[in-house]
Amino acid sequence: MRLKKGFITHESEGEQILVSSDTKAFSGLVRSNSTAAFIVNQLKSDTTIGQIVDAMAMEYDAPRDVMEKDVAKIVDQLVSIGALEGEVR
Amino acid sequence: MEEIKFVVKLAGVPIGVAALYGSTRQFCREYLTKETPVFSVCITAGDIALERQKADSVNCYSDAYLETLALYRKIAAGLLEYDTLLFHGSVVAVDGSAYLFTAKSGTGKSTHTRLWRELFGSRAVMVNDDKPLLKVTKDGAVAYGTPWNGKHRLSTNVAVLLKAVCILERDESTHIAPVAAREAWPVLMQQSIRPSDPVKLKQVMCLIDGLSANVKLYRMGCNMDLSAAKIAYEGMQ
Image 1 (spheres, rainbow over the protein chains, first blue to last red):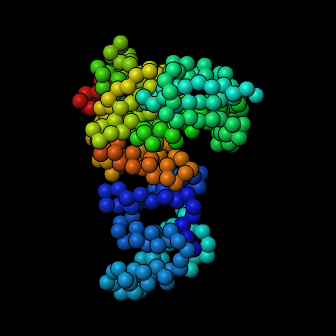
Image 2 (cartoon, rainbow over the protein chains, first blue to last red; image 1 turned 90 degrees about the horizontal axis):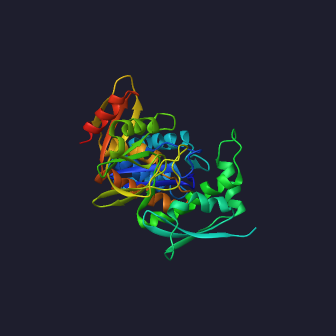
Image 3 (spheres, chains in turn yellow, orange; image 1 turned 90 degrees about the vertical axis):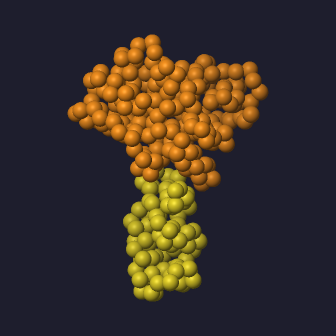
């Protein structure tokens, strides 16, 4: 799975903002803190939940099951706004 | 079809235009220049067809009208290189300072700036009633008149320092208060041009950062009484 083409991120005042270039697809905006932004950034190329958690483990000192939950939550949110393409796994 | 060529000066930038309809040149007549263009845009039948797809399907627009929309879209994409943003709102200037009211269509932006003209008379100048250009700098923003000025065709070929951006909502009473950049940001994004090119979309977001950081921002609930204009003006001093 990966972010669909047309979903663009922007850093503003310490937060990441995600928007779509096609407002018919998604007209809103997603604000992410640094952890969520890390996950969104991983999704800029094709990846899996397991691979994202692996990347997080290099960056953050947190239990794997907590990180898995974090990733699943962000992925769910991105799926709900139609921002991901490919198989969600 | 013979190309119609002219140079239009918008937000201080001379832009070469190759269009298909003579009416487009006429539409731009108050902004024509003899200066050498710094960039050029060309409208094709394909651009007009694309504009028809984007337009609502209820109304049947002429190709000549759709060409003006296609032209502004292309010009606005080019002007991002010049830190200039196409923004949706009604801009009125009083005593040399511009005030921009933005809101979803139908909220009453134009109605509110009409109240300003009633209140201030000749002190109030309509910069642009619908789609002004905003040149964003580190010191603030300058609002420019353009031919794309809404259904009442209200605009003036001027450049005025933007004193405030006000997000307008309808309410039974009128009240205005400053709003933080973070809170205003999504509305500013919603009301800005949305290029399909990711690089240009990033430029738009950088300009919104500049606009929200360097121009005073307000949120106003307002009714349609003349007093709403006075409360708005005083609230932004």
